[in-house]
Image (tube, rainbow, N blue to C red; front, top):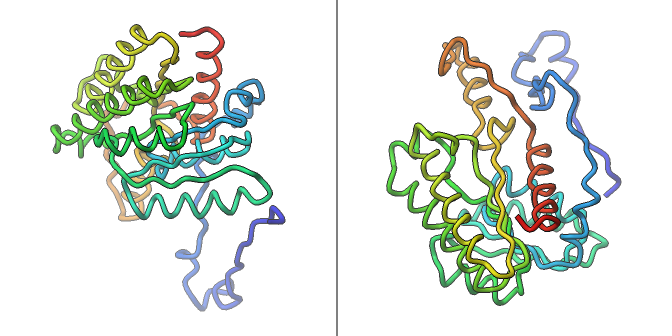
Length: 275
């Protein structure tokens, strides 16, 4: 409540070498790996689109979804609907947000369910009068989706269709799809599933008379559940080797807060331009 971070110092025995200290090292924060300053662009212009609104975030317990919830909560929405398949992830993000919302009037509505279940999705939107949908729920790990293509396609494509069509029927003000750079000329099932999800949203955007449909692509988000950095860190801890796509590959990264700012900014652009 005081805005302070609590940390623990190593014991004196560890500092002088009587006990191993290496296991007590603090992990490097993802932002320190950027090689540049963090994007701290203000998003006050987009705050009006979320203030006093009923907002639904799918995949609210994920790395991107939970950060969306944190940043949106600062805008003062009337209601924040947390839609999540994982019970533990939903419990975790709900407890965190309730700690952050002290002194605010925002209503937190945890909703457990799958985006492929049209009844649960429609009920969540209707009961809570949802006005803005941020669709972050997806299977993102390329090897896992490659190994389970039908499940990945069903979740990423059909799930997006269920949520987007329910949003259209509910007459939401804005629907934003969180897509991936792998949807550009996809070479794997995960990328193809996200491209198909984009086509679903584009189709509904053309048929919509009032709701604004938009999407944001990004990739290589440091610290996200789909990031390659945790894999590299684990491989280094085991003594290597590190598995690289290609020795000459160049990756460009962003942090989770930066990615979420892009989503919120894109939502404000879509409302302004209606595209």
